[in-house]
Length: 298
Image (cartoon, rainbow, N blue to C red):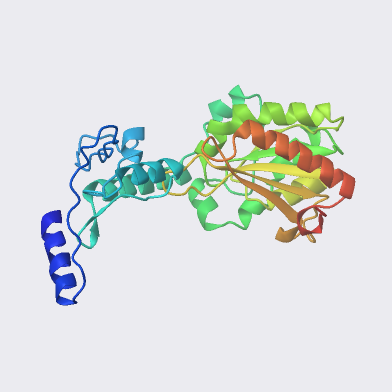
């Protein structure tokens, strides 16, 4: 059923209800009148790269009344809007993009941070009690505890009793670490030092969960622990990083409400450099108030 048939049905129904039937508006021929912007193409092509900017900006609504409104809406959000329908079903292009983004998210969860990358950053690497990715996904409790080898390494190679201890962990997104590391860690460490704070030795925890920062803080005697960890990836967004900051953490007494979280750190959300400045300010306020999470005053 095309647009002309739909318009005929609408006119027929309105006429049967005794209402005035709207007449088609002829294109304006007045001098100076602005022509309606042509709608973005709604044609589908299997050759289109589903990860490209063109595919993400694709508008699948056929014969839109206001193409400019759809274009503006599409530019304003990364959500799946303006994709159109084929009857009750999504269009092929929209479905393929959904499946591609879903596959990318699953791949990100299963990927490992290369050991060569960790060495290239000059980071000490330790592990939780987890030995492989499959166990990490099925035993989150073991990802909250350091292995004995990690405990020994941290005691011998890290600065003790720092004001702020920064920890990096892969979490559920390898891409979040590798994509944002260079833009968040250097300015973060520089900002903390410029604030006159004693900064601990930054290190990388493989297969770490958020609560592992409690054991780290207690082990090293840190006043504030900042954990930069990969977020669970969403559809089409696998580079989102989170910061979990906690004051004077303890394994037995610290609860989730004691943490302050800054999420959605990536180029399409909160830029990493901007997030670094926010985290520095947060650490200073935690030390001033001697609190974190819901115990902080705004």
